[in-house]
Amino acid sequence: MLFAVLEEQESMAQRVILYPKEWDAKREGQSKGERDPQVDTSRRLLREAAKRYRVMLQPVQPMVKIGD
Image (cartoon, rainbow, N blue to C red; front, side, top):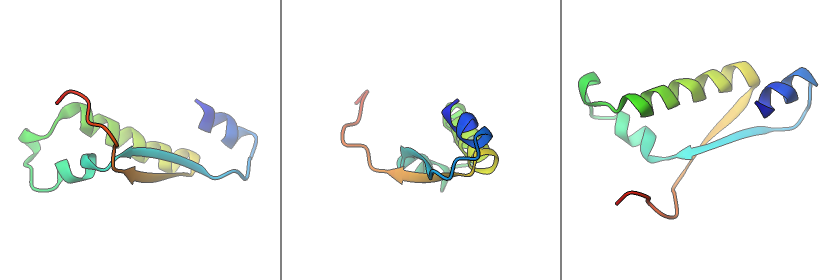
């Protein structure tokens, strides 16, 4: 992973991961049984990257929705 290399080299570069804003909205108002396990896993991995590699997480509004 690129962020691991940047961390190993002690790079001062800012690290940012963009993710769909709807992942935040899906969590609100849903019980644990209603949540999408793939989105939950992705959110968990994003939080881990933020802690381990000092990555900033930035939600964005996708320009095009795929699958609708």
